[in-house]
Length: 405
Image (cartoon, rainbow, N blue to C red; front, side, top):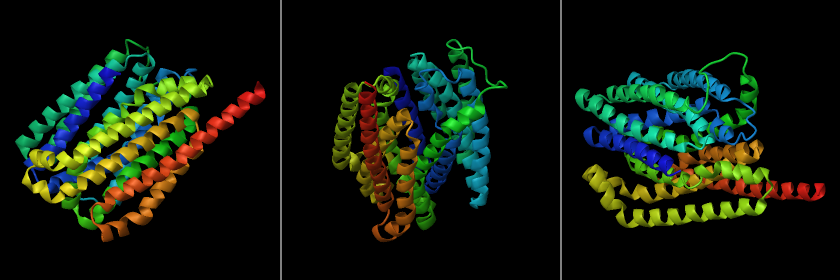
């Protein structure tokens, strides 16, 4: 767990430093293009992920083989790239934006291929492999991006170098190391792909919707206010992603334990763990938000320089949105363990609908911070729905146990 957390923090810190470098070495316009590439690719990355990771590590009966998971990931990655570029062309993005989206999508697909291999490692209690991989990739992509961007002065060259390095790491490190744990193959016919796809399709839809919840407000902001404003917002949002990742590490290593106690009908153990993690997230949020209030101005100026001063007021709402979203994601993970796909899709769908209906007018009347307010509202609505669903499912499961007893 510690290896995994440390590696992920290094990886995300290096990604954040890339955002800092783009803002400091270039302009908010480059940061805006990078944000568009990150946002659009993030939404279609969900097709590649197909919601399989938590399903994979909670597959206690090994219904599907490691080869099946890896092979299906290869197919879903190809489909994700096609869908991403089709959407980008239809949306009318310029050639520079299109190339940046393509390269960042390639980078994300290398992440996704590594992800399914890390799932195999996690099931074999070797999350240290994932942590080491993330640490290597994080440092590597930072160096390669900096070299490409600095030497050429072009964002796309830096993204190309970063994507190629990530692909090499996935093949030369992740694939080779995980093969020592499992005799998986990259591709094999006659596997239960359709069965796996059918069973996890609701998870893919969930990931698409949840990613859209994080993306839609930013895309609306860009359409209404332009790339420069989006670049400023995204520059401040980037440090919050490190906090979001740290919050996710409070619960992600315990997914298998939640699955075990749920299947064993140990409701007391489930609630004890649930309460502990909830308290940990709340305390972490309180400390981070207080730090943002008192130190945010100094920290952002130190990182980005004086040009960020006009946008410092965006930080605290962004931090609040990050933690509400993190708790919503935690509850979504529990719903996956319950296999309660109806609740999962309902919560995400209603939250996303609220953003689509409200964000544009909200930004027009309340300014840039409405981007964060919309994100907070959508995540809070989803979290409330899932809390009620969780209680209903556990009570229903308890009643069945009593009847059978």
